[in-house]
Image 1 (cartoon, rainbow, N blue to C red):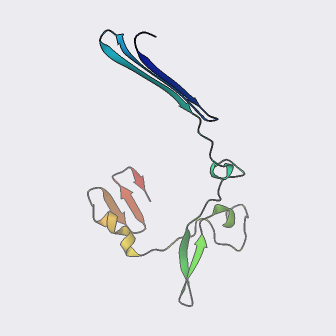
Image 2 (image 1 turned 180 degrees about the horizontal axis):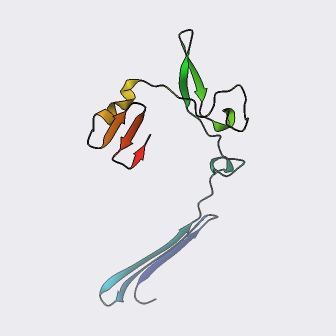
Image 3 (image 1 turned 90 degrees about the horizontal axis):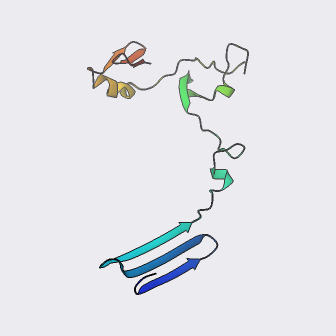
Length: 130
């Protein structure tokens, strides 16, 4: 090291720092260098998203009708719905129509240049349909 300098090092179990300051190292300009590493611990396994620690997925529930004035709700979890292969007999089919309030469509009615709303169908400028 040239000129007057100051140096220090710091180490612990997860951090390494090295500091050096020198005067006149590059002609008349001072020089400063700081190197460092810090090891970050991994997240807990429960937060990793890796099975078997992956959190259980939450499925939405939908209204599929009414029964004595009460809404009949069903989960959208495909493992609990019936299908064409005989899964979950007695449960609603995974293609059961769902019902919602008209206000849900306000976003689409408000932008007729982008969306087309038809009976039972919504289109977005030829990009998708629902």
